[in-house]
Length: 366
Image (cartoon, rainbow, N blue to C red; front, side, top):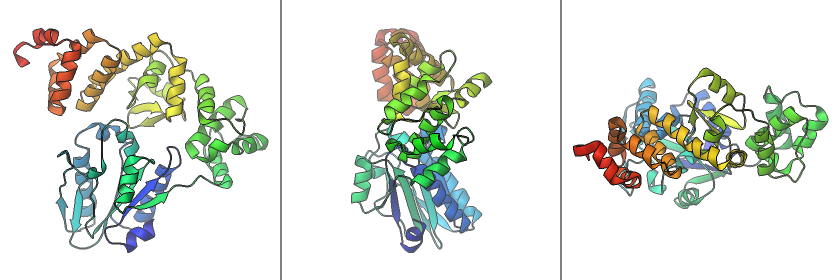
């Protein structure tokens, strides 16, 4: 990938593969190789930086970070703003008078789960002095970018020896006995590192490896059944889309000990894979899931970020909590955050809550 980037003007490389296949590991290796060559590189993970991902200013953040990198290298540049088909901000381009700027963009799968993005986010051709590496799971957006001429680099499953190293690298699983480790490596679905670590964690806890033909859902369910999460955490994790913020040290410790089934991204915790999320939901009753929506909505609204407030509205709508939804919408700060982000979405939420109730509470503001 690095050789291709250094040899081709305006090169765009698309790293593809299933979730859990190791795309992020590869992207971090690309970043390390570019840094080792002392090249100006900006690595940004939307998944790791949830605050940036939740903010409409994510692309502005890329511009600011790109400026910082280029200024540190003493390079002369101009930022070329772009717009998508829907007139939203597109991925910025950097025109350099001399030299080359490398942008490594990871974690967009997380953004795609919650935002309707299309190929117009990305430039059709890069300036001669800019290179782009993007990681995406296989899907319509990846197909569109490949059709545009992005060079595709699929992530292949790990070899048996590399999978053995992955297990040995983690403190919690490095002491697995030889026979148990070999049975774990025989598991057909464990060729992707995320799935392998889920099974390794369960094997370390129970001393049982998955059967060769077990699917990822079965192994995830067994691991989730061993988790001990206090109070409302399990239902909130089961219903979350973007993650659960921890509100005290004990919650932080509890969710940290649930790794690798529960992972931390920024200040938020979320299920490591869709299969883990499905297993968490299966452990909860309908009443617990309902309360999970309500509790998580309250936490997200307290952070006072527009997209998190919007996510809180979604949880209350899904729980059919119209009274609580009206209370949230008629909080002046929440109303302003939502109005600045998406006034039409705010109008829909007001209608669901009962527009007359909202009118009475807000009066002339509506």
